[in-house]
Image 1 (cartoon, helix red, strand yellow):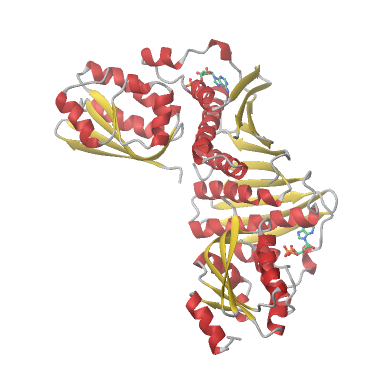
Image 2 (cartoon, chains in turn orange, purple, yellow, blue):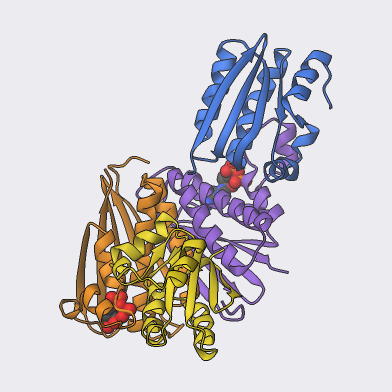
Length: 141
Length: 141
Length: 120
Length: 120
Ligand SMILES: Nc1ncnc2c1ncn2[C@@H]1O[C@H](COP(=O)(O)OP(=O)(O)O)[C@@H](O)[C@H]1O
Ligand SMILES: Nc1ncnc2c1ncn2[C@@H]1O[C@H](COP(=O)(O)OP(=O)(O)O)[C@@H](O)[C@H]1O
């Protein structure tokens, strides 16, 4: 694969936790082909798993008939992933830190923190009801 | 995964031979989750690889900017895969048998024969220039 | 492939849960119910052995957060052991090592209960 | 992961090509050029060792079909050996065993050249 050529994949997949394994394998195939190390592939899989788990749980509240949209693009030294839903959205600025969650022994609330820790860039584009996106980037050295 | 629930995936992927490995991994994830044995997963991967190789080579003549559409659906005891392109199409009734090709020592011409041997059902829906589909089905026992 | 299994073994008042496979938003309820069963039986000295766990996401981490208070209020603890570097990293990224004892193997985990020590 | 490699070893007038990885529509040109090089050097006694080949599609099979005539016209042959059951199945489904010698290991492949025998 010529690294300087854009290679763009789009996957539409039913919003079900039983599909998380399939999503992780799909991401692994692309990330490996692009040349990431096994460690980094694991991080990217985790970030995508977390974002998709959020769509399944929060955006679509376990409604199996909804679809998750996953876009993966490799280009130059950069892997970009956009995961989007048409759910109610949320305010990413209002999340607690993992330290706050842990000290409270509160359940959950760690997914987005993990995504931010393992990816090089993370941003949100929230349009409740129409299109909510989490965009994440990982650079290859 | 509840086997009686339809689980339908669509993937759009650039028409490049370097993506065949990613396609095989994607198919593997779904087929394994559905419960096929490793042997059968290998057969399904092969059939999909052959159909996608044909799109890349014959439908799009190695034009990297084109996309292959892959639809995978699991439902009950059945995995259905449809691979489609918008190329020039062909007449599936006019293909030589692998025996004819082999006796002639002709290069190639074995892909569709392989697909037919490993899948339980194979059909074509050819509309040159607009949409050419190969549809293949594998049943799980 | 992306399956998950929990196997339990009791030794005196310590229960060990062996996790195997992939612990994610799909499989965490299995782990949760194994822990809930221990709560119901009032067994609060718990070791979780990760040696066969290939993958964990935050849904798996959340399970620990859901039980640790009850466990500790009952003079018990959850000791974590035998994590692969990949699994440890996820715990580490979120600061779990300051809250939980994470040790190399099961013997060390048992020792922690015998000594009655806790890192934090 | 889905990479491919060919390594060549010559022993007297027999050349062995070791295939490794995934032989498909992306990687077959590498195998083709290894065979073309043998043609250029007029080395027509060829063994292909599949022991490290994980995958083959019809693009890989086509390479054999493209060279076998030239090879045999020059009193040579291509002997195939050490295929995994998965790889053998692909050859078998298309009837290759009636046209090609496919044997268990390299020793048997060399033997075929020494004996001067051919199955078909
Ligand atoms: N796709 C989404 N749609 C709606 N809300 C979301 C989405 N993703 C995250 N959220 C909100 O952000 C919060 C934090 O998410 P996260 O850090 O992954 O933890 P958790 O999912 O365990 O609550 C969620 O509780 C939810 O309110
Ligand atoms: N998607 C397609 N678009 C156009 N022609 C196709 C397509 N798939 C197959 N064909 C035609 O069918 C023939 C036989 O295909 P196949 O059995 O896979 O062998 P090969 O690709 O090696 O020629 C091809 O040579 C081509 O002419």
